[in-house]
Image (tube, rainbow, N blue to C red):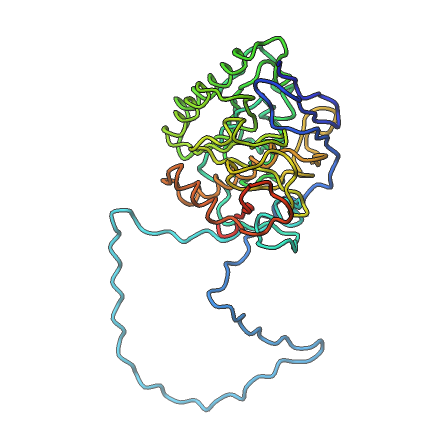
Length: 393
């Protein structure tokens, strides 16, 4: 079946229903959200090494003078031995160790960012990380999007155009919304990661109904092949799209990207079916992501044993192009695994920022192993009970 484009209405992002290449996007509109406060740039203090908080020095009450100790009698100090100068340490082959960066807190983020940096559902209106994706490139294999959107902070560029010419400012809302979740300055998990738009769909509208299934798959393979040849490490590839049936050419192209040292994250799909049936979800070398709700429940989309973990995918914040101030934050209506996957891609960028030499397998092990277990409630339809967690990065 042909690929349907997301409709470009001012306040709506709509998904195609069934297609050979299927954007993993439910019928998700967007509504204006109260903009999260920009990062203050003030680093939060590092966590204390001991659970016991230091005792605060009492502050004098208004109008009251601080008590001062009586001056002690003057005595002649006894000379002490001259201390031996400390030898300057010799740098190792790896160079001198630099101090770890201090945590940075964003206040009043959207609920999704607030949720993934803590273990429980009790939100604290903060999102705190130490590494922010600096030094990492995330390749957004999707419809082209406006890389000049203010939310992307001048860190986005075009890697590969998808085919028919179009002005980037008319690019897809789907691709831009995904990019904003990964690396938006207010809405992104990794707000200092570089973003590269890699066009995998034809034209400006996120796909073209006049293409055959083979042509659509070939376009996705072309995009992945470009990333495998041109991608820079450390890097992450986000695939918020799926194929309706097993596709050996797509699987081989994904594996080539992984073999090049890039971590691949894919959406599980939105059909409410077994994710194993909709590659690249379920491929052995891919991190497959299902969508959770703000009530910590399965969003009811694709599921099963091929899912690696859940991430927020309902009522999440990002930006779109059409019909709104491009600097306005909007909230998705409904749920989509297209929105869940970029939270995990952003988390992978955080990890690689701290561990730039990590392999894709090591990144996947960390994401799965560090996830919050048992957080999700209700029937998960065979999916593992693991929710993305980024605190500590």
